Length: 327
Ligand SMILES: [Mn+2]
Image 1 (cartoon, rainbow, N blue to C red):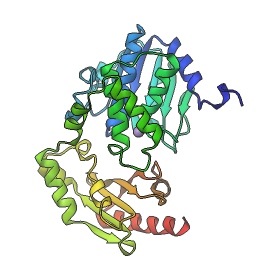
Image 2: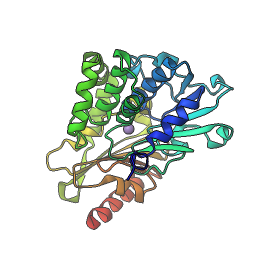
Image 3: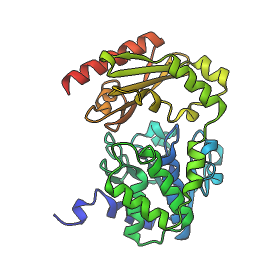
Image 4: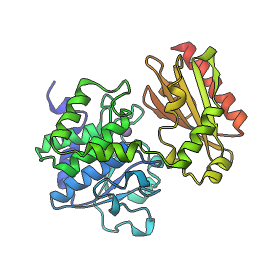
């Protein structure tokens, strides 16, 4: 098989980006380290090539990611979207509704999709998809290598954040030798690891109060192999927490000894729960999420459920039992 046919779309995407001159880069709602790190890294590389590149993130850049070089130029107001665009790049997600914008808006533009979610079908005219990659940041690094662009300190910090984010700081099961090699390269290139750790690992008082509630409400099912907890819309309002500040909370139920699968239900608006799912291999939570209309990776996935808390827990545990029995 030729290299062209076996590169998951890298050559095609690289060519499309090379031709572009005015780009809009989109991430996903509830932006995380991989999404924001990949966006800010790619933007810097495109700017260096003399292109105009803007990033749009519907909710803006969460405070903990504002250390990322270039994050201060992220657009979150639709009115600020550049009008003259030739190319739209969708990073780290495979569905338009996850970008916070509608596909209809970009019918005149070439659409490029770079993603590592297993559920992604490729929503672009050119798609670079690799579900074996631990993070979209790994794909941006491959793109850099393909173009033979030099990775400077700021780009290295962004890509290091992306990879650290999606591997749970090199602890999740997707932390392969390839991931460590990439991290080593980025550190050698000047990634500011201390800055990344300081910003990603420090918690706000409100986060710790939310964690307190999550731990108090921890329930088990599947004979102790499953654990779930929840936060209500009233909790979030009382604590003054936005859903984007809850990243990592589900890792606590998952850390419980003997737990194979953990779920955190967060009521993002009354009667609407965002469910984060985590598992230990070989349990596959992307299959659980898929039966509930969501998606993701085998050890980290999510979905949205509508109904009362009790109804959503019931549907979630029923779907989990069904999928686990089949696995
Ligand atoms: Mn990702």
